[in-house]
Length: 142
Picture (cartoon, rainbow, N blue to C red):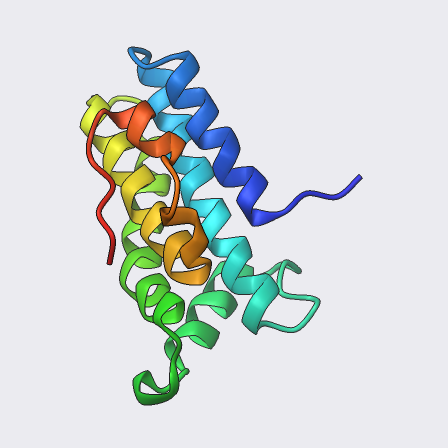
């Protein structure tokens, strides 16, 4: 069985809806948001072996950053903007258990990942998106 970056993002949304007041869930939401965007970038612009260690995350980042802005699609520009932020948030959420997290951290990660996915597939913004329900914040169309 395979999965897609959209399904990984869906897990983040579902987790936020199921456990909206749980710091451990917020940390997992942040991690899933990062990995959903990481895999979207990897699947779309990297060779098939982009997940091979070592340095797979660095390779995806470098491949993304090497694309010239003038020729980049909107989703690539959004990924360039949000992937580094999501990576830092994911590392903090996964490795710094002493750092307190607020629900807003998870909501921010959901909105950042959603911005990339909506830029990739604008039809996602046409209907009520579950991120709006999960975060209680309005969908921001980029």
